[in-house]
Amino acid sequence: MVKIEVDTSEMSDFFAKCKQAGSGELKKEFELFLEGIGMEFLRIIQDEIISKNMVVTRLLLSSFQKGEKENVWEINQGDLTLEIGTNVEYAKFVNDGHWNDHRFVPGVWSNNNKFYYIPGEKTGIALRSKYVEGKHYWESGLKIIEKMIPGFLENKMQDWLNKYFE
Image 1: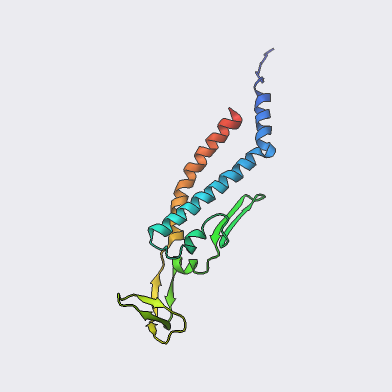
Image 2: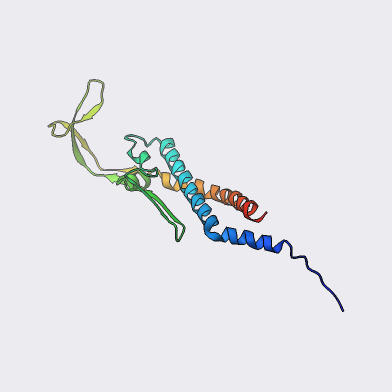
């Protein structure tokens, strides 16, 4: 008769760790991790806006912050979905490019050759139709974050393995 002995003394500890990880604690940590990636993406988008010299009124820049009134920030915890964006109407035009229509802009020229917009002024300038190239800050930000995510995920997975299964 062949007798086989299997040491299962560590199995109960392993199953206890699996139970702890599956209790929702790991899911909460993943949600925080996902939110952290979203925050990093917002920082990258802001850096792209600054580096492409698009900051005039700062409205576009500040719309890419969590909690600002013009932004879109949504986390669906059930599906672990993160949605980031902006409600600033001209953000898409700045990113993608657009046509400026021929129109009259009321205002005056100063002595130092600067134009000042003054609503209702009888003098002004006539703008001709022209295409304004897009800055493509969104695509640049996506390329950057897509390169970073595998490293973030690998490091975080190792942290979770160390925390829950070591």
